[in-house]
Amino acid sequence: MTYVILQPCCNDASCVAVCPVNCIHPTPDEPEFMRAEMLHIDPATCIDCGACVDECPVDAIVPEDELDDDDSRYLALNAGYFDVHPVDDMPMVQNKSWRKGKFSDLTVAVVGSGPAAFYSALDLHAAGAARIAMFDKLLTPYGLARFGVAPDHQSTKAVTGLFRSLGMKKNFTLHLGVTIGEHVTHAELLQHHDAVIYAVGASSDRRLGVDGEDLPGSHAATEFVAWYNGHPDYANAQFDLSGERAVVVGNGNVALDVARILLSDPEKLAKTDIADHALEALRRSSIREVVVVGRRGAAQAAYTNPEMLSLLDVPDLDVFVEESEVAPDGVTTAMLEAEDTESAVRTKVALAREVAERAPSGASKRLVLRYLLSPKAIRGDGRVESVEFVRNRLQFDTDRRIVAIPTEETVALDAGLVLRSVGYKGRPVRDLPFDEGRGVIPNVDGRVIDPDTGEPIAGVYVTGWIKRGPSGVIGTNKKCAVDTVDALLQDHLEGILTPAGLPAESLISIIEDRAPDALDYEGWSRIDKAERSAGKERSRPRVKFVDVESMLAVARRS
Ligand SMILES: Cc1cc2nc3c(=O)[nH]c(=O)nc-3n(C[C@H](O)[C@H](O)[C@H](O)COP(=O)(O)OP(=O)(O)OC[C@H]3O[C@@H](n4cnc5c(N)ncnc54)[C@H](O)[C@@H]3O)c2cc1C
Ligand code: SF4
Ligand code: SF4
View 1: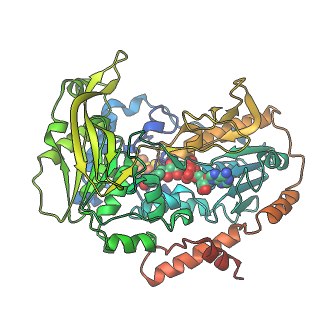
View 2: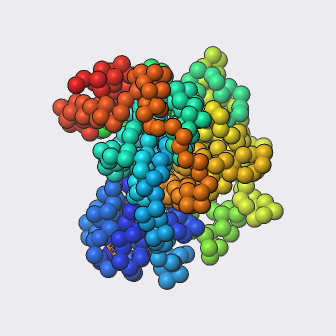
View 3: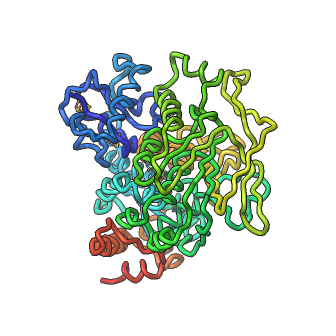
């Protein structure tokens, strides 16, 4: 028997190190890791020891004989990976003995408290750093693990349990409600620490660049996600859900998340930590159909197979694919015939074609996946009424990359709500360089560089989405964080870092002066406890506070 990895996998690779036969891949040391949809267990090598199960923070690993019908496809999804990447070719995980016992004098500030920040802090703690201070502009930690991951993906949010383990450590301090670049400057942070790691994420959205984009009724998916997840800055946002159809432009996992939330039974969502205001609005929603539109074909769709599979499990929902949009074409056929095409890509095409052939079940709600369409304009008289798309066809460019070429054909879809979901984008941090085009802080392997000279700026590092752009799941940030911490530790050993000139206490008085509402880990623990106990009363994981005043009132209660 083998064990199988399922949809909640967040790629943190905790299971990899404990597997006695090296059968979980890709490992963080393999080139495929940063692009992997999930990790996979090779059924031919797995010895059924179960060691990986205890390590998984999100309960994503199950024995084959406990797979239910909905999850049975994951057996093939796991095994398929090894058709292209046989286990024999793969190296064992690297060891880090060079780090042992050398960093007991090191002090580091980590900006942000999302997954990349916590993975960095955990790794610095494991390396024995003397002091790790974490800062977040919000009064609650965990970044997109709290405000991005969909409320019906509770098992994924369980990863925050791992982060919580750091909270009580003596060498760790948390400063919530402190914006770096506003309450504390970058220079001040560096004066008080040997090094600073920025893990500030990518909280802005990319624009479509078409007419009508700012009409009422057209919103960035980033805002909709923040609203249903109870982000305090979006608690008062309004979304008109009175139309029957919503169109989501873009087809990544965020697009599928927002579509699924719009179409799920609100009473099912009522068992999650969705914000109360969103739940009430969804209960009144008239939306019956969501159309998710991608500009290329099914093989190039930005969503992952686990997310597509989870759509097929939503009760009272029919998923539709236009047969003509996934019919074999020369480019896709050539790609599928190539030996090195990833099994995940083959699965994407097979799944889309399978859905296209399905007869509708008569469910009351519909999710329609459209391909090969690029938005041309959002139309409406004073508010959104429809979206016009241009039909694309696929073609190989001169580098044999597959590109979408617009044709003369246009397609119009009526819609009462449009959500634009074509990517998150980083925001600049004051006094740090910024690459506007890519929306990242320019860096080489996590070392922030001066764009004029290309040279690293001593003591300044980045990790997570602000380092590499908005791609990858929670666990992808672990490898990213460990790489950055490796660079920082090596620089420390080589004497490149300037030791902190000022003691930690003087930074505390700056914070007390400029951010009087800032909270520490204890303050957050009170909020966390209050949210959980409110949730317990209503059989929910937690009921989130969505306004700053309530959070502060609870945090200050002794
Ligand atoms: C809608 C959505 C759904 C997702 N769903 C999943 C999922 O189901 N499973 C999964 O594995 N992954 C999921 N992901 C991906 C995952 O959330 C990201 O990989 C991860 O959160 C990126 O981590 P990060 O630490 O780089 O950024 P973030 O999580 O964005 O954290 C950045 C933090 O920095 C703080 N910050 C920003 N600027 C400053 C400043 N100047 N001073 C102080 N603090 C600052 C922010 O407040 C924030 O807390 C999802 C992402 C999105 C957008
Ligand atoms: S059950 Fe054991 S052998 Fe199989 S993947 Fe998990 S750790 Fe490896
Ligand atoms: S979440 Fe982490 S530990 Fe669990 S299966 Fe995925 S990579 Fe392995």
